[in-house]
Image (cartoon, rainbow, N blue to C red; front, side, top):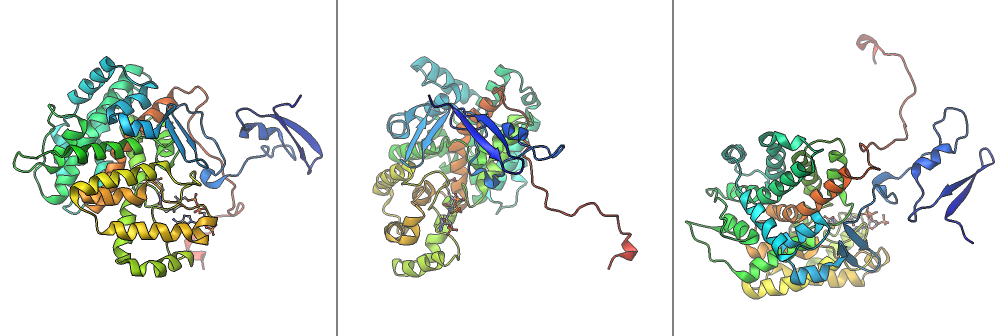
Length: 428
Ligand code: CMC
């Protein structure tokens, strides 16, 4: 009978080792016994950018990148996008099960109770320059929350962790909305607890003179977008939250590290970069020349490609449908024509086909956010609002995993050997 083991021969010594295989993996620490000489520390695995290294066990999100499957806690993303609310999805990610009606009501009430931020958070935000990037404001303000809630350091207390998670879910939209108003020079609008989660956020961003006429289609579309972004297993920002959280810092600091990671153009910042790219292309007639530039290595086709998906990103498929609903309300975004043509040409081009590069979640989301009235530099903030439940679910899972310790990768040292200090006067 076949054994779940891997037998390897170290040709340096001729010694043979048998390593257990569990869940399709070998433990990197099992390689330490493979040693060529006394004191060499044993064999390490080298995996820059974690291309083939599982860093944790997780029961939260399942992705099959070849088949374009994404599930939260076992539930297909398509079904959640169709029927769930964002807070219901957040509860599912955080607690592992869909809430009963009573549980959902209790969670919504809890979140509603915590939507206000200390007035000093408002003052803190006022200190940013008028043209501050809203992601910079968000990451600064969420990090600053740790100074308002020093009790968040009690990360060994499960009840306390729950309270901080609720605070984050409740206060992020308020901070995000304040950042939006700040960049427009508009007075901040305080939370309205008679509205639902999405309705309150939209009201805080768009209310003028005490009035805002809600558009249920646009609000549901925004909610679907947030659901589609809610978790994506061990992506760059989630790994940042886990890694920073592994030092046992408070969750506000860990989440601000996630926001910082998301800010980058290869991650959440791609939705902003897509819009800038579409502006640069300007007209469908310029697409072939643009594609040639990308193929020649000058820049990337933003919103295309994914580390895990080697087929169509299931979120991008759903987002295209949301786009139809939104544009029916707002009129067509003129850049949609360029995006559709760009996609058509890229999907027929050998360069993109052979590398399995398909549109990802960021390719169409920016066009929708723009049609809803959000400025380009605000798109990643909306991504962060969506991703928050994932970050804090993964943070919680990490802290309660007995196999985890402080994150601390190894390295291959490539620098100089020991050499004596040269006094300044004698340096060439
Ligand atoms: N345009 C042109 N070429 C690309 C692209 C692209 N968007 N993405 C990958 N490639 C090429 C790349 O040059 C490489 O080619 P070669 O083998 O000839 O060197 C090959 O495809 C593999 O690329 P890679 O950089 O090794 O792939 P990766 O898994 O490290 O990168 C990625 C994944 C998402 C960072 C990358 O595809 C990319 O930069 N995409 C554009 C930015 C983007 O849309 N990011 C959003 C990702 S989804 C949402 C999120 O995570 O926030």
